[in-house]
Amino acid sequence: MRSFIQLLIPVFALVSFSAQAIDVKFEKDPAVPLVYLNIVFKAGASHDPDGKRGLTNFMGEMLLRGTSTMKKSEFDLALDQIGASLEFETRSEFSVFRGVTLAKELPRFLALVESVIANPSFNESEMKKLKSQIVSQILEERGRDQSLARMRFEEYFFGNHPYGNPILGKVTEVEKLTKADLLAHYKKAIQAPSMFIVGTGDADSAVIEAWAKKIETARPQNDAGIFEKIPAPLIHAGRRIAILDKPDRTQTQVLVSQPGMTMTDPRYFPFYLGNQAFGGGSFSARLMVEIRVKRGWSYGAYAYQRFGIEPRNWQAYTFPAAKDTPEAVARIIDMIGDWKRNGITEEEFKFNQESMVNSSGFLLNTSKKRVENTLLEQALNLPQGFFKSYRTNLEQLTRAQVNDTVREFINPDQLTVFVLGTAKELRPKLAQALGVDEKTIEVIPFQ
Image 1 (cartoon, rainbow, N blue to C red):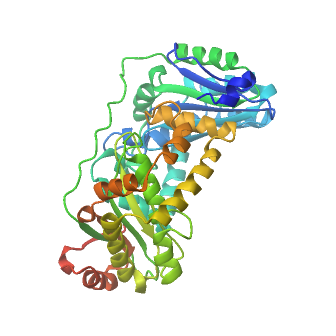
Image 2 (image 1 turned 45 degrees about the vertical axis):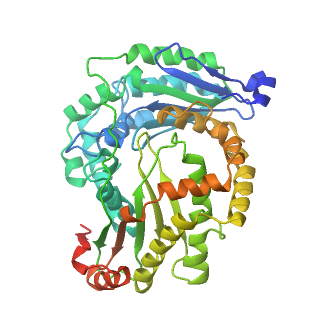
Image 3 (image 1 turned 90 degrees about the vertical axis):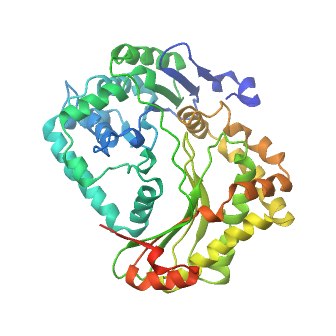
């Protein structure tokens, strides 16, 4: 991912060591005396076993709770003493140790991270404490309508597919996790073939390369094998409408969704531009104009895709007052149909193309952003330099390409309408607004 400027200034060169099992890409940047490291594992919530949802996140958090030679309190103190931090982030298809340290303390920091990765203790007393904390987090998410709606929508939309797995898991399943579960998952998830490292900062890449070889030796490929490829989600047939029933809601959460595409799909860039005109974050986007500016039904209305190695979903989202929800949902569906039939105008095309081309440089304007791009490219099996190609791909688009793609991709007959609200008040009004039999609207208890 070397730009023309990087080729002229060798000190910022991105160095790749693909010959070793643990691939390393490190961009030297002496601008500040810090080093940022991301140690990535191709194991995420989608790889949680049936009945053990939340296991990947739990395992990652437990890795930070003590090693075979250090208690959690000792490990935390050791990080504090060198001014470093280390966190574990779980996503659907991968997970990451994100760390930052003072450059002068890099050797001590790497030794601590190595101990975490190679010598965990999985202390049962710490397991009990962590279970309590994660259960509290799950219950807290349930208490916030926005996070509850998104979590339950994913489960509803994807059904039994791994993309529906919640990151934190389910209370009953987290509470039953055992040390044996952790050890088995650790053996499979934390091994060299499933790892890569990306970073930036005031350090020599050779130091990171040598450390990666030590990790490779400590966690070589083992007899646990690696995770199987996540299958493509099954595409549901027809339109579905569901209400996540939560009592006494004066405001609702609305998601209108359909199956999506991958970022490697040839339609990605034309649809990306078309969607920006329809539901992007600007006040000129159609959804925002119609739902907020003209009608005042909601503070915001957006449309976006969620991406993975396999197609996930495209969705429109808004959060109107309960009294306005039926009309808002009906209007969004009408707008989606009109968008499919008529595409975007020449004025919309020119405005959004210019805006997106001009802002594409912000994807690459810092070393941390370039590192994050590299991380996503490797984790989601994207071509190297994918994010660097945004400007060129957007500049080459025509309005005809955008509208042909929208017409091909958008399918109003396959929409999933998901609303968090009070069902007894909302269901008959929603049925009337959408012209459907009330009995066809599914009601799901929020608990």
